[in-house]
Length: 358
Ligand code: SIN
Image 1: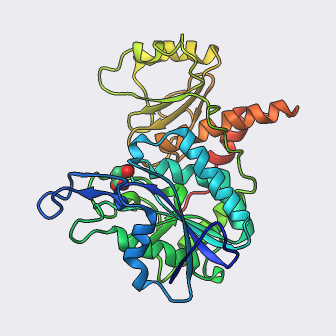
Image 2: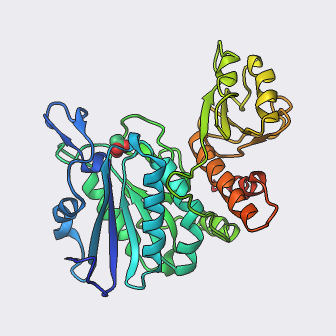
């Protein structure tokens, strides 16, 4: 492997973008207490140097540090920066594929955002964008980061005949579409994709592959990337035993543009919310209903009739539905500016109704 200079190179290479996370984290006492650590401490060049002996000699890599953060602090402006970096790099003929090291806590949002804003570009240009990260810090015994990074680089450089370009994630030797990432465990090594449809990277599962192709066929235009500072304000509210009307009424006098309602079970919410939600809808606040269970599908008018103005999220979890709603509100505003009478509902339906991979 050779690490080449991003600014001067015209030779074909895999671009590795560093965002931080546990993969770049360091523990004070890695042997005795690996879970007490600080994320985002090792630079992307350092992570690549650690694995360079295992990378095929003819593969060229370039790197760029976009951030080095704990992804719990991920902001919308960082998503904008990441989206623009990916979109621009995809257009660069020297870039064969892109790997992104990212914290796993909010990788679900980053993966979904990249699919919605760059998924079609990646597929059309025949390039793979691959997110990865780690559950153990870089200096912990048995750290999973180096293998995950190697797997992601391998997947980014695997010939296209095996699987089309697109936005993927690799963890623990498995690949999933990045839009299917869902961290559903606090510490398990495969947490970010333990609930996601996957394939081993070394031997592609044909049924997963046909699911990927169906999603890509249906996703034919990317959403615009909101400019930093222009992301619509959307909150996630969770229904629970003892939920109060105030959880909703609190927002009625705010500038919030959308609420994602994470209901219990099939997405039902507490009866105390019914009246304030009607008020929210009549104020023009966009409402999306999903389930706090984190998986499965939310169906229209089940378990009860949906309030007027409330749309169901289909298979989107609350964090994904929130990004989808923000992008849909933004896309509708952009369309209206050029005289197209489209609504957030039109855009939201495009992404919420994509095929699921089973
Ligand atoms: C983070 O999300 O930055 C910390 C946790 C992790 O990467 O697993």
